[in-house]
Length: 372
Image (cartoon, rainbow, N blue to C red):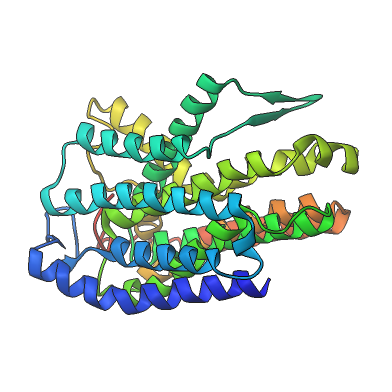
């Protein structure tokens, strides 16, 4: 645990320190979020937060290779470097998009390229749990599904990046939940606690927390597409890597059921439920109105919270609350498997619902910031 905490701290501090430099570079090269008709912020805000986070993640992973415990597990170290390389590619695509506003097709091609690097490095989805068995994926299917998951997660995080501090906080909470699950599961099942999933989620959480002081409302800089796409790739890759390093059949045999074996697949989907739900709703909404799915609008979930009368900060905190409930709830129920864990999660969901609907005075001012 100490080495995981160390790499998380290094990732956070490095991101925090690099963010100021990246902000100056963004201003120098004109990588700023302009004030558009659909926005409310009154001055351009610099991008390149994703570059700072990439620096924190890479440095933390390099450190992990040289630590006594994590460094001696070559599979974890090699997987981490593969994911960092893919992260650099997808972050670079985001940087170019922040500078030049790439066409949607070109940006999608860059995402597929980054996902291809992950697959080429051996990090791919190997199995899917079924009610009475574990379904092993063939190589072509495994590659296709892995690429689709990475691209979906990258765009889901990009969609939720609509308010100051929202995406960074949501991903930080989700990463901490997934890290808690993988680490505690390894202890409970007597597995090796050194996994790619634990390492990547630890450094991702650190990078997000290091960036938040610069991105909290009112934000001094945005993560931009470089950050949102990077975070989506990191979360997806950590999930996918777990299927190659945890014996799902052993989980089922030891527990007498499929709850633990389902969680490596289900938990990341639950963690990203809000961003993915927003992505799917946006696709349906825009298609229904005859526009392309990538054409921005002001009807995301966070915008609806603002229109319902919640302040900018309260809307972000509500999204944090929902992410916490949806992320840690399954972890508690899956690992504890007791009646009180179910009751506790149900109460948390009820509290989140009440706080969400508590304000019945719709806002007339509209969203506080840009759209995704």
